[in-house]
Amino acid sequence: MGISSITINRATNSFDTDIKTDTEQFPTMTSKVKTVSNDFKVKTLHTVADMAGFEAQWRDLEDRSAKPSNVFQSFDWCINWARTNTFDNDCYSLHIVTVSRNDECLLIWPMMTTCVGPFCVLRWLSDPFSQYGDALVIAGDETDSLLQLAWQELNNHPSADSIRLRHVRRDANVFSFLTANAKDDGCHNHAPYLDLAGYPTQAAYDARYSKSQRRRRKKIRAALAKNGEISFTHTNKGQAFDKSLEHAIAEKRHWLNQRGLHSKPLQSNELGTFFRALAENGKTLKPLASQLNAGEREISYEIGLRYKNHHFGYLTAHDSNLTDASPARLHMDLSQRLAIDDGMAAFDLMVPADPHKKTWSNNSVEAVDFFAPINRRGSIYTYVYLQVLRPLVRTVYKTLPAQIRRHITRWI
Image (cartoon, rainbow, N blue to C red; front, side, top):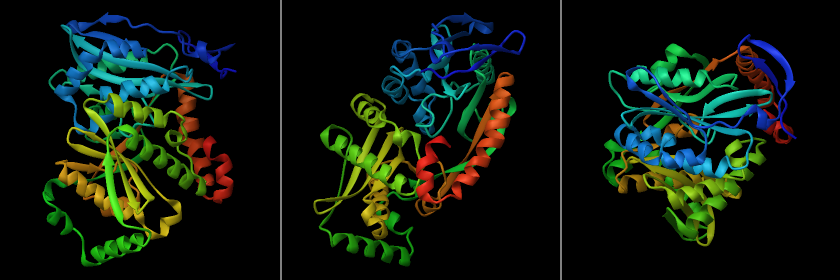
C-alpha cells in the first residue's frame, strides 16, 4: 500500500484534501532543457538512463572541478548507487540538476526526492549512504550564478515540501551559498582526518605514537596472535572482496544490534549489492576491502574508498567476541600504514567525530546540516518534526536500555 499524504495547492498555498499514493506523490518526470540568461541551459536528470546518457559530461566536470571530498558526487558513486537502490523503489525519485553552456557542463547538483511519512523531501542523492553533501561546479566569477540557477530549480520542484541537506563541509562548494540561502539547523559535527603529508615513511608514522601507545599496540598484537599468526590482506574486487564485504556487513549489523542501534545503510539489503557493483564498475572511484586474520580466524574488516589520492574509511567491523582485545586498533594502524605505502595524501575518517577517531587523526573539517522549507507543509516538517519532535524523541531514546532500543530504533 502506498504512503498517503495531504497535498498542497502550489498556487494558493492552501491544503487540498485528496490523498495520493507513492506513485502519484512522485509523478513521472522527464528531462527538459531550459535556456536562461547568459545562454545557460538547465537540465534535470530523472532516471538512471538520463544519468548514463550524461556520463561523458559528468566525468568531464568531475575531472576539472572535483575535490577529494566530492567522492560522493562522483559519477561512479552516484550511478552505481542509483542502479542498485532506486530500481522498483517508489520512495526514491532522482532529481539531478545540471547547468551547461555551449554543450559544456558547468554544474551538477545531485539530489533525490524521498518520502518521509506524508512529506516529500529533497535530499542529497544517496543520503544517508553518502557522508558528505556538495555540488560539482566550476570555480570562477559565475559560480554563484550557477548555484542560484540550480537552487531555483530545486525550489521549483512540483511535489517537494522541503530541502534537507546534511553533512555539508565548511570547504564544500555550496557551503557559503547555503549559509546565505538556507537555514543552519544547528546540527554541527566534524569530519576528522589524518593528513599523511607529515608521514612519508613508516618510521615517520611510528614517531607519532607515544611510548605508551606503542607498548599498547604491541600488547594488542601479542594477545590477538594467541589465536594464530597475524595477517593483513586487502583487495579491491573479486571473490575475496565480496567475502570480506559480506562478513564486514554481517559483523557490523551484529555489533549494532547488541547495542540497540540502527543504521539505515547497514540495514539496507542493497548495501552489499551496491559495493560489489562499485568494485566491478568504478573507474575513478574504487572501494578497498582489508581484512585482519589471526590464523584462520577473521577478526576485523575495513571497507574503504579510494578517490583522488585520498582514502575514506567507510565501514569498520570486527569479531564481537574479541572486542576487549581491541582488534580494530591494530587494523586501523595497518590500514593507515597501507595508505602511506600506496601514496595517499590523507586518511579520512569522516563524520561523525567519535571520540575514538581522535587518536587516528590530526585535523578535522566542520560539517553542517541545512534545511529550506518550500511551502507550509515543508515548514511543518522542518520546524516541528526536525527541530522539535525528532530531537526530543532521540534524547529519550538514548536513555533507554539496549534491549528496548532494539525494538524501536528503526523508527527514530
